[in-house]
Length: 503
Image 1: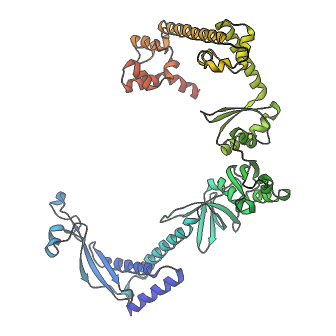
Image 2: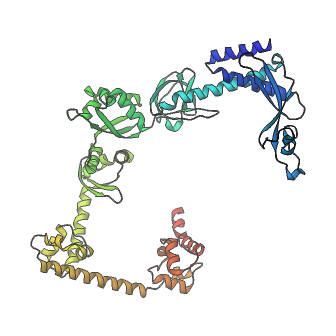
Image 3: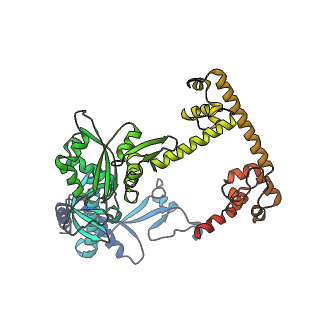
C-alpha cells in the first residue's frame, strides 16, 4: 500500500506543479530520512532509496569515514554518524576519507510519517524547483521589457505578477520618483538581472534604467525595431527629462522625425509610459564636438575647446542662454555629459572672450618685454596661437617660418631670446628656493625640526600648506625618512584644512 501511495504522491505533485517527478521522489526520500533520524535518541545519518518504478524503498544508516581526531584522543567527534578510517578499512580496504559506510535498517512506514514534516519537505523541494525553473526561463530574457500587474507594495518597492506564478521585484531606487502606482496597475519595466537565490526575489526589474527608454523606442518606433535607426546612447533623469542619441542607417530617413512620430505621437506614448518624462531626441554625430553641440540642444553653442587628455570640453554659450544650457539644477548639462561621455564645462561666452582678451594682452606684453620685440610682432605671435615663452623656444623652425613676414633670421633670433629668457627665469627660481626660509608655523609644527624644515625649504616647501599638498613618496625621496613619519607630518600639516571644513 505504501509504495502505491508514494507513486500517487509523485504523480499528483508532478502534474499539478509541472515539476520533474524525480524532484518529488527526492523530496519524499528526504522526508523519510528525517522521520528515520527522529526515531533515534542520539544524532545519526540515514539514506532512503525509493525504487522509481515500484515505489518500494530501503533505508540505510550511514557513517562518514574520517581521520582520527588528536584533540579527542584519536577518536571521532560524532560517533553516531562517523567512523575511523582504520575501522572502515577492515571491511573495505579501498575505502577513503569522506566515503560512507552503510548498513540497512528497518524502514519507517510511509503512512506513519508525520504528515506535516513530509508536506513541508515536499513543498520546499517543489518551491526550489519552481524557482529554478523561473530562473532558467528568464535567464535569456535579461535586457528585455517585461510587463506585469502590481501584486503588492512595500516601502516604495513594487512586486509584479508576470503571470504563471512568476513574480518580479522593482526596488525603490529603481522606481520613478513620485510615480503613482496602485495595486492592480499594469507596469512595464526593464529586466536588468536574474539571480538564483534560495529566498526573496529572483527577477529584478528597473523603471529608471536608460535601457528601458531604448527598449520602449524599439517597441514604439518600427524603424528602430527593424534596425533602420540605431539608438547609440541614452541618459535619464527618471520621471523628469531624458536624452537619446539616434542615427539613421538609411540616408533617406530622418531619425529624429521618425522617433518623434506624427504630431509627436510616438515620443508622447513613451513619455506617458514613463510618468511624463520629457525626451529630447538628439542626432548623433561622429564628430565629438558636433555631437556635444547637438546634445546641448536647445541651447546655442558659440564655441568649444576640446581637451583630449582630460576628455573634457569647455562649452561657451551666450549669456542669455546660460541658464538654458545648464538647465534646472544642472539637469541639461548633466544629461548631455552622460549622453556624450565627455565632461562638459559650461561657460559664459562673454566672460570667455574677456578672459581670452586678457590672456592675449598678458602674453603680448610678456613677448614684448622678454623677447625685445615691438607690439606688431608680439601681436602676430599671439594671433597665431603662441601663448608663452616655452612654446616659442621649442616650436619647430618650419612652423615658425610659415608665419607671414617671418624669415629665418627673425625666427632664430626669437627662439634664441626665448631660450635665454627661460634660462634666466630658471636660475632666478633656483636662487629663490635656495635662499627661502621656512615659515614660523612650519618650524613650530609638531614632529618638525629646524634642519628638516630648512631642507624642505630648499625644495620650495616653506609653509604648512606647501607641506600639506605634498605626496608621501615625494617627501621620502629627498629626505630619506620613513613612510610612517612622512605620512604623519603631512597629516599634521593638513589639520588646518580639516578645521576650516568643520568651521
